[in-house]
View 1 (cartoon, rainbow, N blue to C red):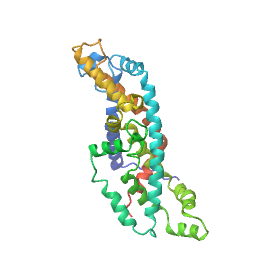
View 2: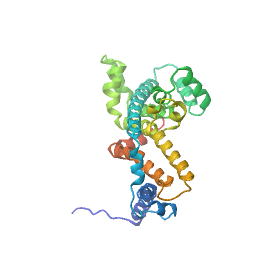
View 3: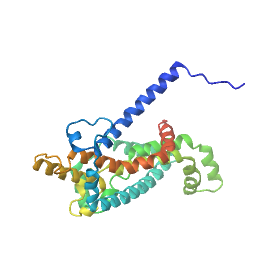
View 4: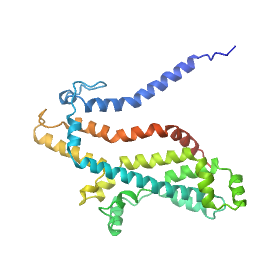
Length: 291
């Protein structure tokens, strides 16, 4: 006879708590989406809680009415892909080198990288550096400055040290394999979870960032990423709405437009996340183990 699994009171409480926490995480997204498709009068009166009231797509129509939105989307996609590829290449290479015990001075180099997590030069020195390198108003000012993250490096380094046995690498070296071959044929296939996790960190961080573009992109407006374009769109709508005296129906309410911009900018990441979720959870747990 098959043993039936009994559900205890503790299991029921555990599932109820998890369900409650999941609903808390989901509630803000549902609230913002409901605001984006509700009539402006209900939004202004703060009557939107969970379900939309009325139905209006005026905010989304205003977003797509701007022809430069698609251009900004293209810029964001290109920058995010290039940023993630370069960041992963640098992070994997540095993490593998620092995880090898035969590398002399690896602890000193790791400490020097760790210091940059706590001490930064600041916005003005960064801007002067971009100006001296002639990178202002170029693609590279959106890709190169932040494409290497010390936090991601430390997670991947710990993962390499824990999940890859030294005996496996030593046997490969005895067989005549070089470090590039070991990294490509042994290390990377065994660390897919942490690779997917770090790639998601890089992609989401770059996709949601707009502050560097706000500082570095001034004259070439066609290089404005999506987040910055939506920021200017909301600011413009807010100023116009205030100039008109807040008349409902004359212009799109800024709160409704903000909600629509949040949904429009978040939806691509939400569509990608389910495909890497299992790697993300596993990679985060493994990368959290200390060396």
